[in-house]
Image 1 (cartoon, protein in one colour):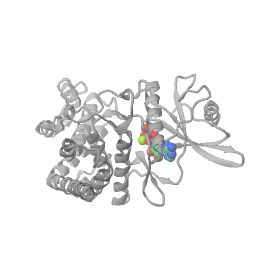
Image 2 (image 1 turned 180 degrees about the vertical axis):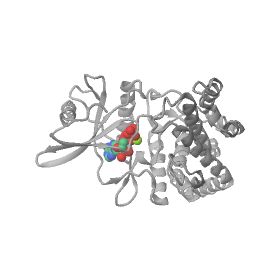
Image 3 (image 1 turned 90 degrees about the vertical axis):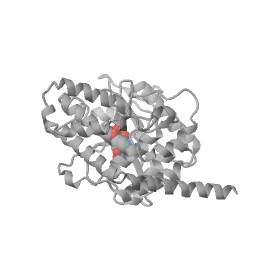
Image 4 (image 1 turned 45 degrees about the vertical axis):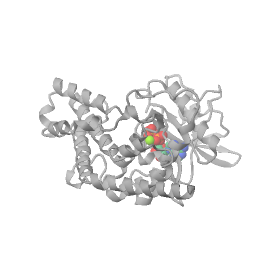
Length: 370
Ligand SMILES: Nc1ncnc2c1ncn2[C@@H]1O[C@H](COP(=O)(O)OP(=O)(O)O)[C@@H](O)[C@H]1O
Ligand SMILES: [Mg+2]
């Protein structure tokens, strides 16, 4: 990031309507899209922390639209009073962001204290709580009135589009890497039906988060309960199942995305069970039968999609995902495909869990009514 020193950060903070004097700053290393800085300000003998973020405008081409979405989403959740959310601090001009002289867009929010933010859940209860928090987030936004939110990235989870892009790239083989790919081509072709297994056009268009990694939800340090869903850049109209699928993909993997030893990659069924419970506890009144029918496929689709995206980027010569060594995107693709294989072996179990957990909640609902 090009704005790192204390004076520059202090200078940016001065553009926001926030009391206090700059004390210190520290980069937060968790996010991999925006630059996130935790800033301390001193005011009347107390020190308060804030999150200052520089929006990555290479990824998000229209930060103004993005911030408009951000503000509508956070205000709507606040208006319900039932869950915490981020609070945007306006700039002194009354904007939702500060645009600096280098063309960078900055936003500022109070730092939420007393929370955990995990990359990997320490136990299944955290997975349950995270799933419930993302589910509650979808439910809270299900009655947002007015114009639809603006898509901040087009075709974000269009699996068929990623597949076509992969095919085109494979045919061109511009950097001569296809020979390294081995039997992955056959693996992908055999599973092409995953591109259309979720009938997205027939499912409700909802406001969804679209980046449901575990480190995008803050959990209470004491109780483990979800406090706030964060990282709202990709909140836009979409399909609820993609949020569920991506949470399963990122949380139910025995290793992280960078693992080299493929024998270690396993789908964690107990974590899956917890996520289904948490997600359905929050959303069972909202989801339609068609959505429930698609739920078990969603993790496979999302895992397949990301595997294809890593592989395509490898075949293009690494244009999108950051790498530290030349075969990294190929290795990342292999991890996703291995996870997908492991999910396939648990497919019946996944169906069963969803159907049992759904039934429990439907029965409870009807017994309350009668
Ligand atoms: N308001 C906040 N309170 C506490 N922690 C935060 C807050 N905002 C961001 N963080 C921390 O910063 C990290 C990166 O922020 P995030 O908005 O997710 O950026 P990115 O889009 O780069 O992933 C989060 O994973 C979380 O650990
Ligand atoms: Mg994040």
